[in-house]
Image (tube, rainbow, N blue to C red; front, side, top):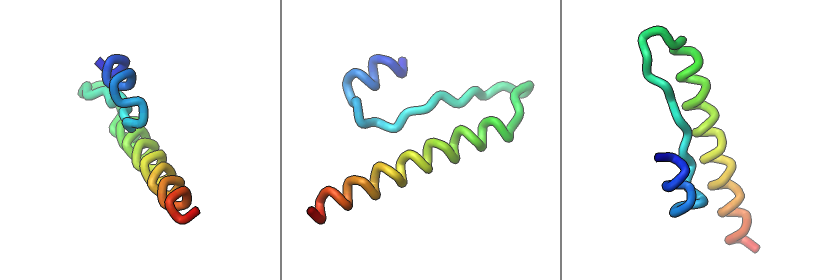
Length: 52
C-alpha cells in the first residue's frame, strides 16, 4: 500500500511501523522519531524556500 501512496503523493512522509507483540517498542518509537525528524526537516526546507 505504501508504494501506490508514494507514487500518488511523492512528498508524503510515510513510514511502515510494525505492530506485533514480539517487536520491540523501542524500534517502533525510533521509526516514529525518524518520521518526525524528516517531517521537521521538510518543513524547515519549505520555509527557507519561501523566504527566498
